[in-house]
Image (cartoon, rainbow, N blue to C red; front, side, top):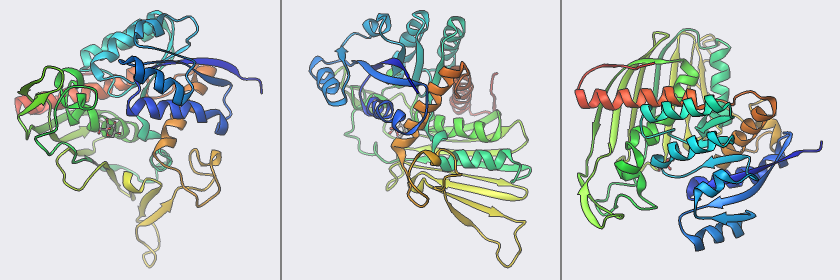
Amino acid sequence: MKKKKLNIGLIGFGFMGRTHSNAYRKVTNFFDIPYEPVLQTICGLEEDKSKAFADRWGYKTWTTDWHKVVEDKNVDVIDICVPNNVHAEIAIAAAKAGKAILCEKPLALNSEQAKTMVDAVEKAGVANMVSFNYRRVPAVTLAKKLIDEGRLGRIFHYRANFLQDWTISTKVPQGGIATWRLDVKAAGSGVTGDLLAHCIDTAMWHNGPINNVCAMTETFVKERMNVDTGKVEPVGIDDACTFFCKFDNGSLGNFESTRYARGHKALYTFEINGENASIAWDLHDLHRLSYFDHRDDSIVRGWRSIHVTDGDMPYMDKWWVPGLQIGYEHTFVHQAADFLQGMAEGKPASPTFREALATQQVCDAVLKSARNKSWEKVPR
Ligand code: SOE
């Protein structure tokens, strides 16, 4: 198949810039999509690092001015991997320039800003997707299939955790290139937007819309040095957040995230309990899905640990042979494949900006609930 070249302009080359670049480089080796992504331009803040990144990953050109990438006639796709406070400006300019857009999560600083981005991409009619990559772990996609097939029956409970421990030291600063996630001006919020947004995206994909939330947040370290200003400043983000919620289908949700769970680096887990069956998953063992089915004969009934590697499992026919697993980086390859395939077919790849706006609205309601110490309705 002769593939059409699709030139990628990637803005921001931190951790996420690397996962996305790696995905574009690998996607056509494994997936039959009609496009050949070309790493056209990389854009970062510093000249020497931008050039070094271009050399290492094979970008044809580099720049330190994102406007040039958006205006570049040779660029077809704008991939946004910069801190959250710059997403909106770049995405709106890219939409006006008619580019397809893949944007890192969370979509924006808040839902008001996210709405302006949805309006811009929908008005321009450009392809748009938000990088909630964990949906594309094969075991997580399998969970969606099992739920959609009705195997769980009526769902009663959805609980999810995302636990880390990297900000416990009071010496970790806020702001700057490495620690912008701790600066509310750059991040919009703390664990709610950064980590719980993943859990909320997956949960609403699995279990439908969330309508009411009741939350509590805490900022354990109240002041940190700000790398950008050189001053010790109040910390404006939530270090930890716990919330309860109700889903439209009548089930109850229970979510927790913190960066203060000593010993946990990226422990994203969820468990779903239905009338007939339950499902559990753990990012530290990401290729396994735990499944319990009450309809099994009682003498063999118990939790099964499904090794999600066979060719009939989601995405797995594209990789190795049964029993050989894949990992974190592959979720981004799957994302690139789905995004590019969606573009080729003129179908939006999920989650679109509009779907990510719904996640942002839950995050906003969670933060409002914690501030007001009250249940909050999620606006639609
Ligand atoms: C934060 O530490 C972080 O890198 C998030 O920003 C990512 O979205 C998450 O996948 C892993 O943790």
